[in-house]
Image 1: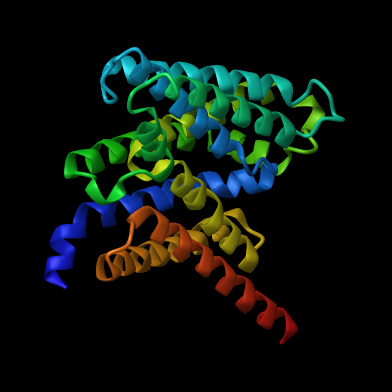
Image 2 (image 1 turned 90 degrees about the horizontal axis):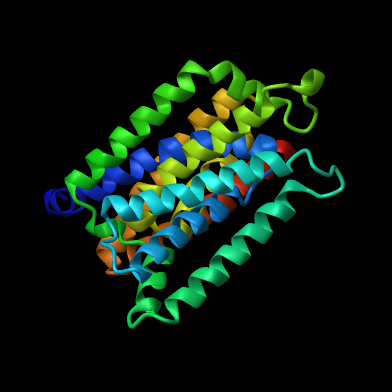
Length: 273
């Protein structure tokens, strides 16, 4: 066990931090019914990284981060603006269009690069097993900054999520609130997409929040329940990956999937009882 802790210490802490922050965002995403928003934002961040890679910029360089953030800000502004353009078009449709176009542009760019396929594979699967303590610290500081900002405007964020489909009195600040929500979620994604990968980020965002929603109607209780379930699933996935010598990202996703089905079964048994 000591060998496991020594080797997997940084990935364990990273998974706990990412579970907490993405479960928080996931609870809001479920209320807003924009389930695939993080896939779309993650793809935009990955597109920024791919553009940087295309122009031979280091992946962790300021230029690469700036390009990713530029794409995130553009996406956040677009999503915030299109929500009220046409009530006949679901926001999920717009989010899906941005995702598939972003993915296709990234694929076209990658096809022009010698190691483009490996780059895209890395962005999808991540490499959380190899995260350093410096990487963990960076993620912690990013989460701390986002958490502090959300705490200051928590009332507005929660009101926006709870009334997302039926804004109160037109909600004059809805664009700004949406933009803040999307941009801060994208900021977290920028600093975790290379570590966790697009698939695992989506898993962190949705599965714990859905499991929490199965057992409670309160967003606070959903967050607490989802966080506990997500942390336990993360530790289980890391243990399985370590002892079975399997890819960490894929093992974590499958473990979260099994956790969801187990939670769904428990919920059905509870309701039947």
